[in-house]
Length: 120
Image 1 (cartoon, one colour):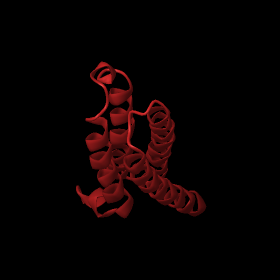
Image 2: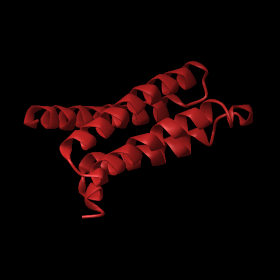
Image 3: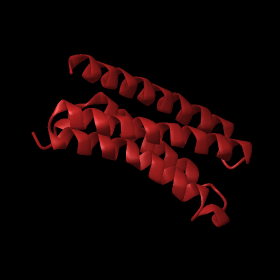
Image 4: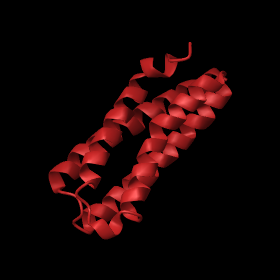
């Protein structure tokens, strides 16, 4: 029961996303360490963290609420990645790879949120 969230494909995909983001942000300028780098990493880490927390709180209502928080963090991450791309902090290949995985995670979150909303 305690590790049920680890069985969720959306949690696993969001953990892969965290890894990609950390590798990409290592290459950001040093003066962004406490700025955009930190913001991007926190938004990204928030996605699987809220999935896990919501799942462990028990009950579909709480789980849905935390999935919505994860979804919002995904939107925040999407915006921050676009800023990093426009500032040439992230290579285009890294940006595309991260953005594709983020899009997949967002679709999965949206589907799970919709499913929970329909069952309540």
